[in-house]
Image 1: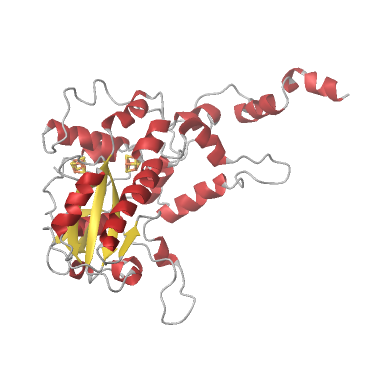
Image 2: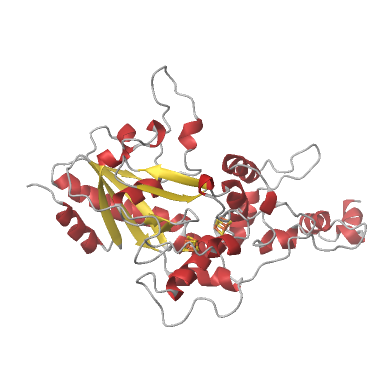
Length: 372
Ligand code: SF4
Ligand code: SF4
């Protein structure tokens, strides 16, 4: 039986997939080989983009400054790993039941990671091809890349996670949205980003453009991903109450750093690997374990600007369909001071906290006595 777009969309609705759209493979002819669906599946004829909503309530804990784990589980990391293997898998099986191959694809971070790797043999691609899920999803017409680079859909605005399926089935494509069909270009994401990662609109030269093989050109801001990654991974005092408490003297200049996304990843992953602060005689701390204890995963910023402020703007202007009886904000969204907390002279609270935990009583002489 011939498989149609309509049949796939009906099956997606049965599965509970929130949004779906389909693009023809020709739209991605100009994609860099290291980020192209054709490099993964040369016989692909169509690309299917699916999106699942992030419940608005999962941002509430971070907005109140009281609870972080919901963001990881229902909005971010675990939502990705929950819905993609389950729902994308079911949709792949449906397509393959009709005799067409279906290749699931989901993003890796940092995006474009593969482009930094060397091929193992001359003339070959490195084994690290990773598509930009946002760009490909925009080319399928499921939504738009907003000014902040966060993906927006007409139903849920920025509250979505994306997945892709490449198939050799020839399917009826959906139209690609224009830049500005959903995004208001209101600048709320610029103003409210605690990492100063979303640049203000100055001139057209600072935009990033994507051309879908002449069918449509879209654009978005050249977001400073190093600043975002440092904030997201908890090294920005303004949006991380955790480091502020444990490391009151630390104040990285996240808002002004020129660090790249890759560098920020390497830095925080190195810390996660337990190498942070490793020098002769120093203690070793596993940063990831430390952050996980508080939050479940990194995701510390909780998308204060690019999702929370954005959804508020899109809800208030009724630009999206999923609206609520009450506004998201009922008070100003919190931020912490960037400056280090004042500590009495001669005191190193980091060291004392460490000593207290490891050797209770050491600072009043008990440990020394016990050793004797
Ligand atoms: S806040 Fe959202 S709608 Fe406003 S400019 Fe940013 S991405 Fe666009
Ligand atoms: S996740 Fe946070 S730091 Fe990154 S762009 Fe969004 S608001 Fe800014």
